Image (cartoon, rainbow, N blue to C red; front, side):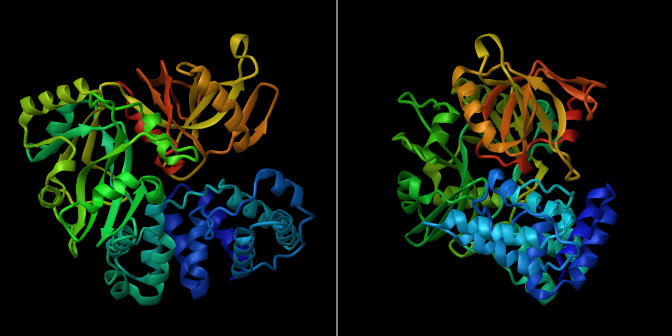
Length: 502
């Protein structure tokens, strides 16, 4: 398949907001794609490199771009091969070899193909082919029910693999896919609730209410004595958390997959700041001990529980990890729920989660079955840029430009600016880190590629004609950066607009 065919569909998908048109264009391309190109095409149209990060920065990209070719000759397989070679280069001479390969690729690409490749390498390819749209397209191309594709994606965790199986083996192949202990599944996500009463009213009496920790999400896999631990982004951290590995080996089972949180505690049992917990996952890991707390069980001793109700999964969790459960009460009623919220806040935690006991585990989806309740409302937003400070902040990147995620896959939507809550340490970090994500700059501002997520506390939102989303933030202040979250997990403009007082 020619790269120009993929470009044509990418442009079509980016140019329309119609979900039906996006699905149609994508499914028609997948239906005619060569079998060995399917995984690559799906990855690229989802805005990802099939080979992952390839070790090439913006300076290298700009230095290696050449005059464009006049006619399109590049194939999907040929471009994928070169990108794989670039990613595989390491050791002495690797920088020069990467530049040589990239120059070769650009020389064979037309102007539009060069732009596509640059956006793909930089992670800036946003064309609206979101996961929901892509799963529908895969289903249409393979002539299988959408629910079958979505279920397979849930257990496999990768759209390209799901697409390849669908187009090769149809519904029987997809239905044969099962959760594998050791292979992470995408975590189920929660939606914010306006209040505890609203959450309880919406979900009814058959709920569990549990502490909401300010920790790091973990997914734990154990098969015999082999343990693997993953973050919410499915990055493996097993080697950096030996105390968690030891704790999991002590659980009362032979195989298990658990969902939970980990955090560092003070001597009095109260949680340490989120940044201290996250420091254990960085290059300069400290010596703080992490504690595991679990709230869900997805598999135990050969039995998959994804489709079981939460109540059944909690029974399994109680059997295998009774000493490591997050504090929770089942069917607490209104009085009990408010008492648990008060206990959670008194213990130094963020708030509570309210979860339907009848809900299955909807991996990778943010639905209404899980609701989070926090007294202070926060939004996870994307940093679009930062202005150079003045006064005591002269020389530092300070005032942040904040954006919400476009649910249709377009560029982030600007909401406003803030410098409130920025400590001296954060100012120094921003000034060092932001240029690594620089898209462009002018005299006053450094504009960034969408890569960094920051948690912002707000007193609400209000209508504004100044910004493209027609809303802006009230009294926004920085709480912390979220290195554990990708921009795909940032809050959408729809979530922000839902906060308007009507």
